[in-house]
Length: 451
Image (cartoon, rainbow, N blue to C red; front, side):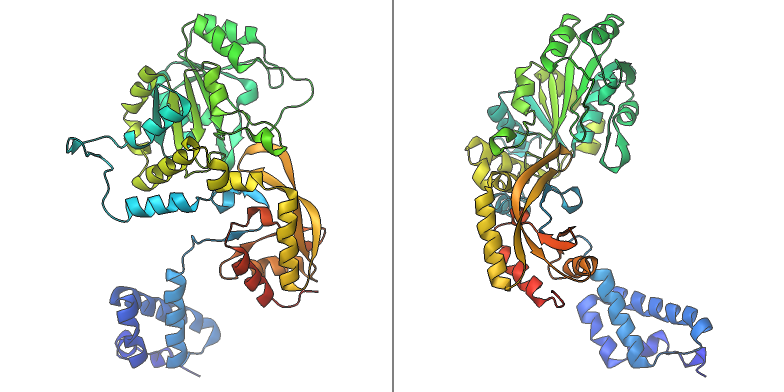
């Protein structure tokens, strides 16, 4: 029986020729830490196994630990699931033009807070502000790190310790367990609920406004629907009424659509332009949903309100970094040049016709020599257009164990995300980006045990 005294010391392992080669590759601190961790694990296991690995096995264990530590947990995947704005997969992918601008801007030094015309310190907010003003015709715009941050900051700046009116039908919980009432409370605002869950009338708002309020918040029900015996006043009617009491209206729009989704045979998602046309004072929306850009929260509207928000101390905590601003500016430029449908991946996916997708799926089946092309549905995802689906065509792969095949696809290089439908693993071409087909097919072809 081996004894713990047979375990080689740290110094002995460090002087092993094979271990000494690890130090130039991974550095001495990491190598030393993994040696110590490996020896500690062996000591803990010894009480059960009463055995000691030989030195060659110990070195392999050290190498494995180094590789596991350095293996990126955040890595690119191929999305063949058919969910366009897949929250777990990072929502909107960025297009090639946007990525080039990010690399050019962030790969070295940048004019993040430098006014190149004067040589003096500038404001990072200007980099997206002018584009948003030109695109939306608004007085002012501000960018923060996400839309929840945009709402939180707006409420904290405009309604701290003051009343904010909101319909009970809009007290929603968004992804990750974050609830609109909780966000409002954290801002310091005093929540005033009006109406009932399913029916809210304009007079409910009137009665609350008569008692005084700093703000009316209208939250778009982006991730659920109320159906049946329901009613709710229009955004325009709420704005007109609120303005009679000199109370500004903040519209939390969520998805941030700048194009009409109805053009693609799905339900209409309210656009930022429609909110502004209803004369709301502020609109908050996301950058990484239907806008198709990076994670960001965008606040647009009246100059005096945006200026007040920008001066709140929370702005420092929620401000965007140079990567976000570079990606957002390049994305907005595509809209200004009227090329979003061809250059922004989210809109490329939405604009694909079923016949185009079918041709792609048939090419996949021909390359693999197996599988069946079947009609199916793609979904929008990301809390946008709940229950809305788009016609698509899927490549269905038969296998004895679909869950096992899904797991093997996730372990491929790069990982492939698919789904199971009617006991078959299906791949949806709609969400596979241009240029990824060959990589996907080569990885699928390597897998065995496909019926």
